[in-house]
Image (cartoon, rainbow, N blue to C red; front, side, top):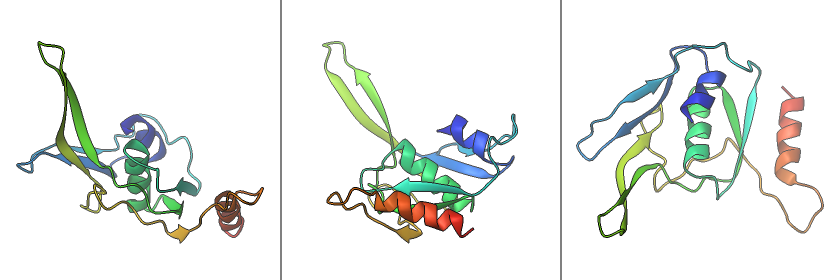
Length: 140
């Protein structure tokens, strides 16, 4: 997620931070090593299955006013997990931190609300979410 965001954001904007139980963790900011790939308006489509990396990407772009979110509220998984294999080959999955967006909030357990709500109707041949996004961009 960091490398994608860094290519979409101007230098110095806050990306995200992670915090463990004690509230400690690093803050990631865009470093501007490369010029942004795209400088126009970005629309990110979200739905109830948008989680983890896609959710953090959407939230960071949204909080920095670089994107408009269109669709449904996201899933709400903003946790950093580690997988540890024990000597007996048992696999242990552990949440070690939470992601926090530039606005200081975590999407974990709550999700991110879109700017424009839209939902696809599977009974129609069109994708209403994409149509909503195209209409929005055409009006920009």
